[in-house]
Length: 392
Image (cartoon, rainbow, N blue to C red; front, side, top):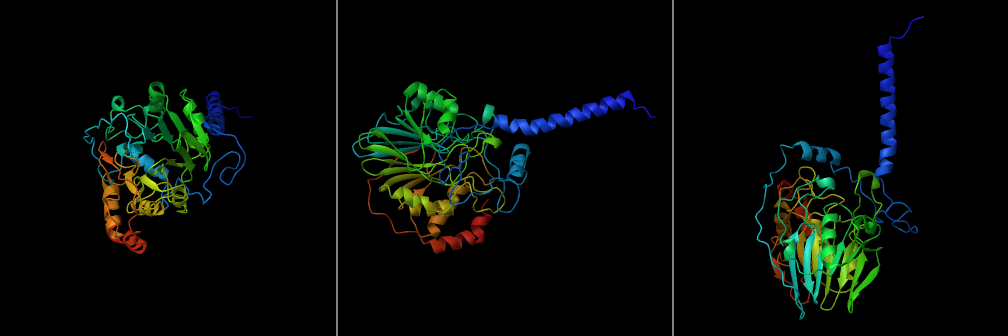
């Protein structure tokens, strides 16, 4: 009878236990990282455990060409010689907003990414605030290329904060904690995100799509549908809801699209049905994860952003969600350049929906008749043409 050499026996034992450890890790760790942010009744977009888009979910780990989004993230982290170059830093001249804006005026300042300061009716509103240097857990993630357009210490007292979903570039716990400690604002978000925000000891009001909350007399927030997904870790995907918002107020509403893909394209009209929109903040960036890509399920590209703008009733709108954190493969200036060209292509005035410099405050005119609708057939033709696909 052959005896097994002790060294081989020990090697086999170590390998066996290593395999067991790996299997346990793959089995246990996802559950440890998973979080139950919300419990409630089953609805058209909640199955009792996870939220979904009722107009159909997209595979968030695939691009339109079938290449893996994980592969994109790997190349972004460890190098991609073919991707367009971004600047290391972009100079910003920060604004110093007025303490309050009233008398029927509305003043908007783009702080950067999806962070927008809207001042109207004596109310100071802040969307998806992030002043951190990185967008990710433990200080790891995309680094800020463009400094905030308003220094935190120059922010007026904030009354209302809108948090669209729980991705790190939109729900920044460090910033929310600073705002809460300083101003005690009303924080409104969608279902489940109050649990995440509460991790920083900050209270938030979480509502389902269609939910409303009064801010003060004559002003309320309505949580409205958009098309996205949520996660803080890979394994807690869609445990919390994503949303857009309508702030209903005298003189015309403010619409914040949050972070979104186009989906069925019907949700902008649903928001517009709540009353005339005076101003809208609409994302246009992070739509390209491979060469020539013109859209993905998670983020709206400039042509789709024009479709959203049209569905909202063509209000004065600001292009956001570009130029602050590098999240995708297009060059920094590609989204606003493409938006300007697409607006021209559709026969629409780029002044009605365009880009602003970070930190540049501007006044929104009172409500007036909407401009003519864009030529969507011309927009489709331009989108299919090679010039915009070639824009890197």
